[in-house]
Structure formats: structure tokens, C-alpha cells
Amino acid sequence: MSMDTHSKKFLDKIELLSKNHDTIDICRDFVLFAATSLSNQSDLHWGHYSKDVWRKREDLFLEHKKKYAKDEFAVFSEMFAIMTIALDENSKQDFLGDIYNHLGLINHRNGQHLTPFFLSMLIAEMQGQDLIAKTQTLGKVRVGDECCGSGSMLIAMANFAKDNSINYQSKLIFVGQDIDWFMGLSCYIQLSLLGCSGYIRIADTLKDPIGNADFMSENVWVFPMSKIQLPRKELCLVNQAELENVCREFVDYYRKNKDKLPPEVQEGSYAERLKKSYPIHPEIFDRL
Image (tube, rainbow, N blue to C red; front, side, top):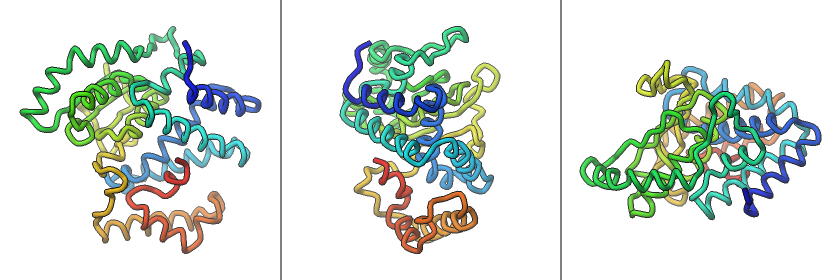
């Protein structure tokens, strides 16, 4: 499989880190770091904060971060930026799925297979007329994949909608499920960056169908756009009381865990940064 420039840059970063770490661990940690960074605000909005799901994810993030030196950890931000640019320039791809295939990380012996993106687009086009009709009559339409992998089918449906003048960010609700958290969160990351609304659930579809989703569960990852549903430049109308409460919770958590976090988050100016960038965490903008 030929690789484009962004994919090659992404692989170069993995190779750089592989001097001291296993490739599979690098990829898994990248997915964990990226998904946790993207999920912060959605967790709070959907009530996860009250059940400490947000804290569990943050603690796991910090625990895995310990494995890497400061300069190594910075490479993950560079990888995130490369992937973001790649999807921005060409949304018609399963960027992470192609990376995993190239690295041989797909477990075929356990029945794990990723749908080639050209085939996903073909299926999307076959099902597309039904989607167009439903958006015209129902308004919002749910698009689901109960074995979503890294997201090829859902990404294809988003692109089909876009090609047919359907605003998938507001008209479609994307729902995916996968038994493998690594794949499910890869899907979560890519659809989050495409601005999709909906959620990803980590569970065994055969034993626990997606219809049983509990939005308070730590296995459910809600896309940030589910709350926002607006381009970044239009993020201006927010509930002031909610803004103050959420930012205060962040500041309190940072103070209680100051030995685990960078010193700049303890500064008073950081609280102002939280407020100005709400409902997106300022760290997201720093890493793009």
C-alpha cells in the first residue's frame, strides 16, 4: 500500500519513539492520549463527571504518560497534528486504519479485519439514496456500525452525506460499537476530528447490543460535536453558570493533583484560558 506524505510523517514519528518503546504500545498510547484529550468536555456535558468517569480517564492518561520522557511525550502532539491536517485535507480516508494495516497491527487470527475505504465508499453510495430520503422526512437520522473498527464505514457515510449536500454534522447521528477499545477509540478520534455528532461504545455487540447503551458508563465516548454542533469560530453562545462551574472543577482538580501536572496549569492565568476556550479545553488548540 502506497502511503501519502502525512502517513509517512506519522510513521516516522512512531519509528522515532520505537527506539525505546514497542510499536503496538506507542499506537495504543497515542489513541488513549488523543481520545482522552478530545473527550474532556463531552464527559462533563453528558454527566460523566458526576460518576468520576472523567477522572478515571485523566488518571489513566497520566499513568501512561509516565512511560515517556518529556521530549518523547511531545512527539504524540506532533502525531495528533499530522493526523488532524491529513483528515482536514482529505476526509475520504481511514487514516488510522491504514496506519495499522501498514504496521501489521490487525489481529486477523481473532477475526479482526478492517474494511478497505474504497469498499466502504461503495457501500455508502449503495445505501445513500435511503439516507437522503430519511434526512428529508425525519430530519435527524442515525447512522450505525456495531462493529465499527477504526471507523471506515462511518467515515464513508459522512463523506457521502457531504457529497450530497447533507450537513452530516447536524443531520446525522453517528453511533459505533466495537469490542476492542483500541479500534473503537480510533474511530472515536477520527469522527471527532471530522465534526460528527453521536458516540462510540466499547462493548461486545453479540452479548451486549448497542441499544443497551448507558450514557453514564465509562464505555461510552461521546463526540465533542454532540454538544457543540457549530464550527469553532461560532462557539460564542454558552451558559455562563455552566462555564464557571466546569472551569472551577478543572482548576480544583489541577490544584489537588499539582504533583502530577505541569506547573503552568496552577497559574491564575490558566483559569482564564479555560474560560476563553470553553467548551474546548485550551490544550486541544495548543496541540493542533
